[in-house]
Length: 280
Length: 280
Image 1 (cartoon, rainbow over the protein chains, first blue to last red):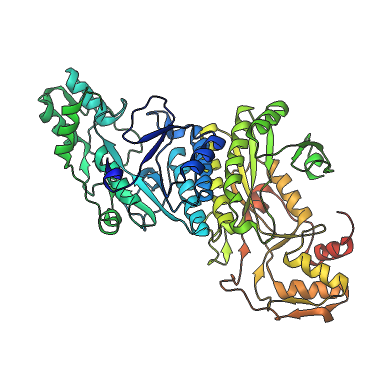
Image 2 (image 1 turned 90 degrees about the vertical axis):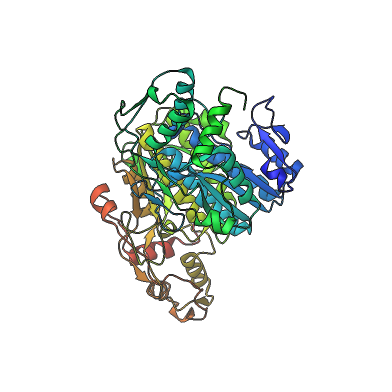
């Protein structure tokens, strides 16, 4: 457990009763500001890693719940400041950037989100960054790019491809020329732990720095599963306005936070396939 | 009453019990999302003009209450959408712009706010604009520049100058070389009524288009009150980082909304002085 390995006494808050997490677990609905304030007051954490959001695949891009999560996140931040917390780290997204750029850099690429989700996350980022300056609080914002791994929900590229190939079903995709930076979920978690455990302020891309065409990823999955014959690359039309290339600058993560991912793409995909169907 | 004059059936919500407003008045604490939702559901307004915020002079620039007002404003917007509202108009601020520019234009000037207040308002603007696109709602955002008029609170330039000169006290100011666009509060209200009553979408500066050095405004007040002898222009040091010039583009307000202010600067200042000390 990356945070515990770094010496943190970890408490986890989840809205799901019965969730088994590798930390002391508290059931909390972040939409309840009174309960949120009470839990944060009781625990009085020095560091807070805020990952919660509405992320139902296919639904979250333009859901009105994005607005509620801004309010809930701000209330959580306020509770943390009241409890004299020291460092707040939130989860941002590569969709905050203007996707007409193919090189996404924290300091130079404009943020012009194309979805309500990206807009809400970026609005929250700017507000928290300004508030943290006023409150003299340490604050960072990890912008997650594309992730995958064991336990991923359906209706996402790699989870659907792994599930389909594992079941022996044809997998239909676009031509897959889109270039994306995919990171194994264990590396994403480790990167956030490193970010929490650093003094780095502001936005930090959470990515490997190695972007690949999606068709290469699919080809790897075909080899790993031994069912390359099931791949129907090009069977689906490319969505309108699909960004051709989204490469992540990782100078901040690598040099300032000092983090290096563990899984190469092939290792990560192999791990995902080998654990598929088992409980995560 | 500008909205009633345009044929609107006006309901006002205020947090102050006993407030006498020229409309059917409802006492509502916007920090209470349940009460907010209930009132909006009951009234089912077609148009909503949201002016409420924390604006205590000297305090609001970097107050944590700015965060609460984002959440409350988003909850209000959500209630309005649920009640099948058609047009939402919010109050923005010239402090959303990057004040290293002296020409503040809705379409070309970058928004890089220097305060938590400006950051919060701009974050809310971007979020509401994106949500309104998803919800297919008409949405506008009036960016208020500098205002003045009868009933203005103390601790602001013109109110303190008018109050001081009216009482026969010396008024100490900076050199007053800063160029600002000041609009009479009655014109600000009329501009918002015009904006509500238009189909214009997005950010619209609420200003006269005529910016003046502050010392000229003070000189007018000296003449109007007959106490120019009390002005101590230059007695205070210019604040660090004071923007030398903030001129408002008013093309959108004038040509798209079709609004023209009524009070010239001298007329507005004369009106303010003549009504000073009387109940607004």
